Length: 161
Image 1 (cartoon, one colour):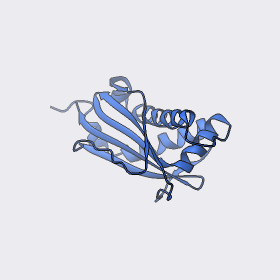
Image 2 (cartoon, rainbow, N blue to C red; image 1 turned 120 degrees about the horizontal axis):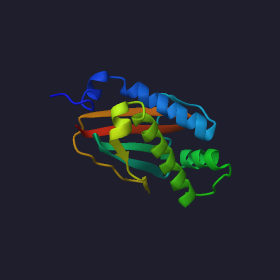
Image 3 (cartoon, rainbow, N blue to C red; image 1 turned 30 degrees about the vertical axis):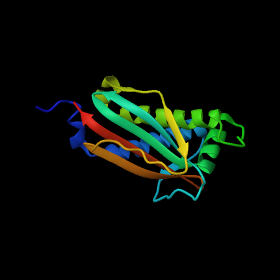
Image 4 (cartoon, rainbow, N blue to C red; image 1 turned 180 degrees about the vertical axis):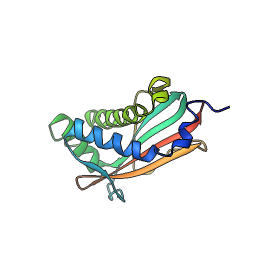
């Protein structure tokens, strides 16, 4: 039997909804354009990944991954001052951007808007790490261009009810 949440798998507009959510968040919260592009991470020494868990009608995660220079610039756009290093303010800013994107994306689907909760952000930093998630029912992987920076965002659905 098909449930309203499971019918989301049939829609096929997930990537477009993610593109729209990313554009909205960057425009409203940072006053900057961020568009889908074939972008690659720069050779930054450090990578920053924010993770927001999804639970309820859909279980999974939203991740935002970028290099150090990108994270510093995003934080600067959000708070109006230029951070000199990767500090708690920068990590909080990246986590909040991921949180807003996850919320905007799920808000485009009435079943998820009311039946899917978001976790608080977790932020992972380093030079050599991999995030592992079980085999997803569906996955959206998108790259974006923010000024001259690359941002990678994924929505991973582990299960849907």
